[in-house]
Image (cartoon, rainbow, N blue to C red; front, side):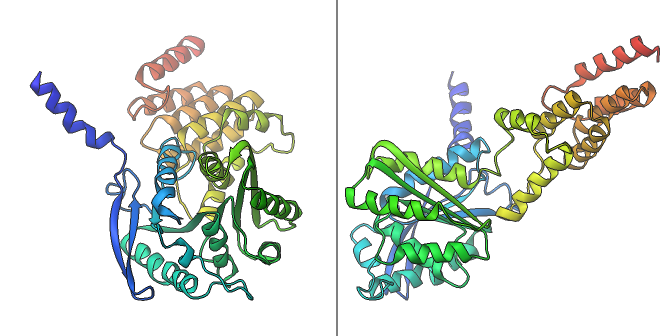
Length: 382
């Protein structure tokens, strides 16, 4: 019994969620130390060539844990990419950190210092210490949600994504945000959340801005808005964090059953292999992430191709599978299926024989390949 208990204890760390690191960062700009929390992806130490987006969480003393938990959960299911989460604790300091001038409504005094600390000290430190991709997101709540927008006004914005949780916008912020988003030459993801029981003044202001931003005419800007029924200023956060992450990374997620249904019904899309390749190219272009085409996405697209009897596209798809997962049976299986439909049993048999010696994947295994080979011999006498 003790032996089995020891094995169980030894296995637990492998399955556990990555534990956050707690750092005390000495800031020359702030002339003080700041407490930082960092959560790395579960397999960060093993995937030594992989880079990760970074999510910067203001109000990290209470927002870090829900953001880090959601990032870990949704990335586990591949709905969003694995990411590094960095939380800046501001307990007792947030009013000073978010100070803005009462005439220009731009950061001043402690706000100006905190602005420089995050952009000129903390972000370079994270980029130096960890493998970061060129895609970062800022998250804030009420005052800190207003504050993250100041980075949007830089000539080269530091963040690609802005998650505003019940923002308490400064005066003139509506005009500034709209003008920046309307004229942006860079891809930007902009999210706002409120709730039907949010603070009245904030909700009124947020809904006015939403009306205006809904009229944006810039294809480079992805704008999202949630108004959560029955949620107040604090509990809307629990709904907004996963919603914002899912929407910002909607292109990244695997192709869902709903996506397949829409794809089948879309008469404008007829080149299904190209559709798949373009999806992964878009992931690279949008998020700076180079990932292999998922096997389930390949199999899902193959089902549509087979249903539509686009056999040449199945041949093209088999090449994608071989390129991305050449160690598995997938590419040979698809090529074998293609040859079967083309009435070339000898070539199909050769592909299934080649697949037999490779790694199994999904429903494809040695038994399945034997069945395919036996079927060809029975049907064609090969």
